[in-house]
Structures are given as C-alpha cells and as structure tokens.
Image (cartoon, rainbow over all chains, first blue to last red; front, side, top):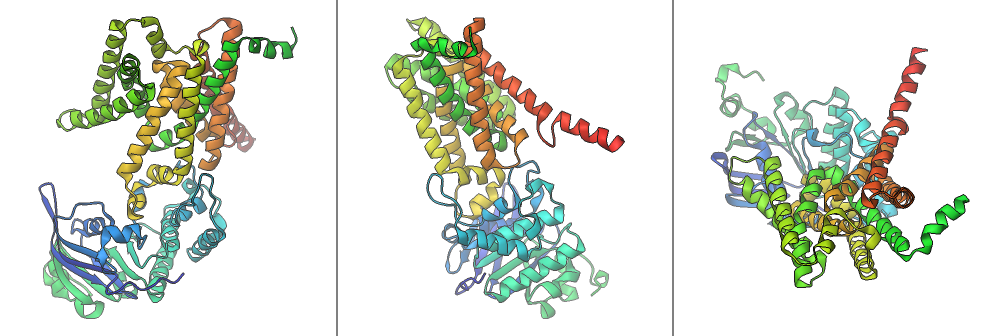
Length: 250
Length: 285
C-alpha cells in the first residue's frame, strides 16, 4: 500500500485562525507535516487539536489563514481522496447493519453503476488492510459486535485502503487496550515509511518518542514545534499544559 | 371456492388489478427508501414530509400540474421552515417539526375544503387505492422508477451519510447535498405512497418495512431486498383481506405491515423474543 509522497508538503498550515461562535479555538497556527514523517500533535484537552483536524477535513470554517495538502487547497485534496482521517469512534452506531469488511470498503471509491460491485482490487485492498490491523478473521462480523479497540482498528483499516498521501488520526490511542495501541503505533510508523505524511494527536506524552519524528505542542496556538527530542523541553511542556516547570517529569 | 379461485376471482375486476399494481410498486419503493430513513434516524422526518406535502399536492391539482411537483416544493419548503423556526433559538427541533408539519397539513386540509371536487382530494388524505386510474398508475410507476434508480445509483453515498457523515465529507462529498437528495427522494416516494394509503398512513410505509428488515438482517445489502419483499407481500395480503372482509384498503395494508413487524420481533433469528427465550431455557437446563 504505497502512496505517492505529497509535495511540497503533505500538510501545510499557515496563519490558521478558527473562531467558533464566541470561542477562539486556534490562533495563527503554522504547521508542516512532511511526507514520510510522523508528526505528533500534543496538547491538553481543549487545546484545539480536534479543531485543527476539522479545519483540514472541512468540518469547521476557517476564519483566516490557509490549509494546503500536497500544495493545493484542502477541499480539492479531499475530492482527490488524498486525505484519510480516523476520528474518535464514539459516534459509530453499534446497531448499524454493515460488516467489518463493508466499513473498510468505504475507504475505496464507490463502485460505478446501478448494481456495480467492488472490484477484485478493492477486495484485495480490504483484505490486506484487515490483515494489517489483525482483524482478518472478523471481516464478516457485524461492526457492532466488536470491542472498542477492534472498532478503532477497523476505522484505521478504512483509512489505510484509501492509500492517501496524508493520514490524520485524532487520539487513536485513547481508550484502547495495550495490544491495540502497540499495533496502531507500528501501523502509523509503517505508513510514514511508505511515503505518507502522518499527523496524529495525543495527550499521552510518554508515548510520543516511540510514535513520532516531529512534534507540535498546541495550546490554542503553537507553543513549540520541531523534532521530538529537541522540542519536548520541560519549559515548552509547562507552557502547553499550563504547569509550573517543576511539575513536569521526563 | 378453491384457494385458486380465491386468488383469481378478484383479478377479474380491473380496479383490483390496478390496486395490486399500485400497492406493490409504492410498497416496494417506500420500503427501499425506508431502510436508509430508519438508519439515518429520519422516521419523524418521513412523517413530517408526508404531511407537509398535502398543500403542494392540492395546489398541483388546482393548477393542473403533476402531484410530484407540488410535493417536492412543499417538502423542501417544510425543511427550510423547520430550520427557520429552530433558528429563533427557543424552539427545539422536534417542536419545530411538529409546528411546521401540522400547520402545513392544516393548510392542505383547508385548501381541500375550499376546492371544488372535494371527494377526489379527500382521497389524498385517506388513500383510494381501489379507485386509482390508469394515468395515476403510470405516474406512480414513473416516480417509483426514478426513486429506485437514483437511490441505487447513490446507495454508497446514502449509506455513508447514515453511517458516518464525517467520513463522507473527508472523501470530498457533501453530507448536506446527500441529505437534500434523500429528502427529495422522500418527497417523491411520499407521493407514490399517498396514492396507496393516503397522507395520514404514509409514514407507516416509510418506516415499518425498514425497521422490520433491520430486525431480520445485519447487512444493509440484504435489508434492501428483504424490506421491499416483505412490504410487497403485506401490500398484496392487505388488498385481498380488505376485498373479502370489506375493510379500508390502505389501513389494512398498514395493519399487515404492523403484523409483519410484530412477527419479526417474535421470530427474528438470533435476537427475536422466541430465540432469546430458547437460549435462556437452554442455559438454564
């Protein structure tokens, strides 16, 4: 599942400000996700991580600034199916009459024609993605019969079959079991190695070193950004999380 | 009288053949759409739209236009009005829907009462499947064909809209546009069902088959076959029962659909009342 690296950058956000009603969710955010690298978006709850994803996926109106994916406007990139997104899955209807394979297949272009069926290539991509997330045996199960961690992996598989150049994951590790979390970290790393730019949000500081190459510390604005080792300084963390410097343990 | 005669005898009347044709076509198309309506959570919307189209249908009758034109205009108008009422801030969506659709329905009834040729139009309210003319049958069949073709051609969008509108947007489609498409299909379908069972019972045709099929299957692809099959069977049974027992046809068809739903609740494999009781008995033993 290789994808063509997006140039000049998988994601390039410049001067992004988002005002939602009375609330200024993001102020003048600059952020770059390079192809082939994993960028972690780190910040406390309410720091604007989900709003930033929504600005890329079209879920919120951009007040000012630009969001470019592979050098073009984000809306055009969405139409090219260049953006894959794994959201937080609490909205999935447990009774919905689709199988695991049906849900993953939604990441592929819809078959054409009245009674068009999925192509052999689609089915192969679905099977490969399910194998990658360790759910090959559950392909024919109803989506509602899965555990929370398994459901998250299904949504990741749906993002994988899209073979998009930009992969966004909003808190993929929150609330999943240890085995699922380790698997997801491996998959994220592998996608970057295959050429995709990956932006993954987390509020789990301990895991960032294993997960990401670069990090952006967010608190409504960018507090610090750069390679993980040099960026996650006690002072920057304290500023992002609103703590005194002495409270931060590395 | 043999069973075969029981079946064939009514078919010697042309009005019965037309009634069976209209019921079958409108049941099938309503049932197809109902699968998505129950999954999106638009059952109440089906009720609202089917009532709100009444003034449109009456005005179309007065102006000599196809019923479908008036129905679509008023269905979309009703949704715009619901949004407008909600935007006043104090009134929640369920109340807004209740206000708009009852007011439009009342407007329709007033228009019926002031329009000459009242009998014709009261049929729109209560249905008149035994009095369907050839041209009405052709109109129902044409509308149904349009709805089925468009719904099947866009089924992946409709399903994604029901399952995960965020994903639909990420893939460059507009959830708002897919919702609007579903609404137009709903209005057109309501027109076909109005011919069968009348405005007041249309919501049954738009909700019960989808809900029944959902009890019987875990796969949407299968629901899209099961729902129309069950609905057509109920339609045919309802027409025959009403013929022999001399009952209101539309209402009998809806009763048959309600009975089918009850049977599914009791007998659905795996999750029906009976299956669960049997499982309990087995674990207890």
